[in-house]
Image (cartoon, rainbow, N blue to C red; front, side, top):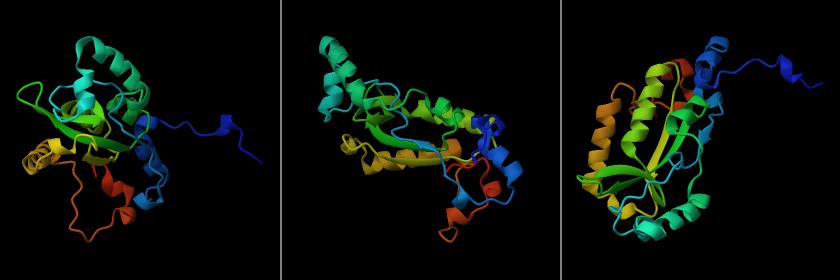
Length: 196
């Protein structure tokens, strides 16, 4: 017989891992189904003209045509309704981020994109940092890869700069392994406050 929905326990999406650990203190990461979002930064479009080789970004910055183009592009490019912090507070613990580098605004910056520029990377890092500070018992899995339409913006020098930026901002939170430790076998209790 199916459980009556009124008898189901309340789940606090903002701290579900903490609550799970209270109930199952020995659970390992491999026994979890971790909710995540696709193209997590695509909740808004902010085209920067710095992606010079990407005609999509260039079209989106043209004054009158750009507004129409962004309206049409938002139908397929915007995949989320919530900010990064909002997604995390709603229970997502896995983020899918697509990276690019934009020369604009000067002096240039890393951005997250979904064909067209969505948000500055720093916006995502700030949201992630705030969430981890407010919810130290949670763990995050972050998948970062080059945006397919802006790969050429990520030179080897930029990639090194990006790694240094992440390391500097999240040094205490980054999960470090020597290659001998498997994530699925890790107790969730050991992964508190970690970003993978």
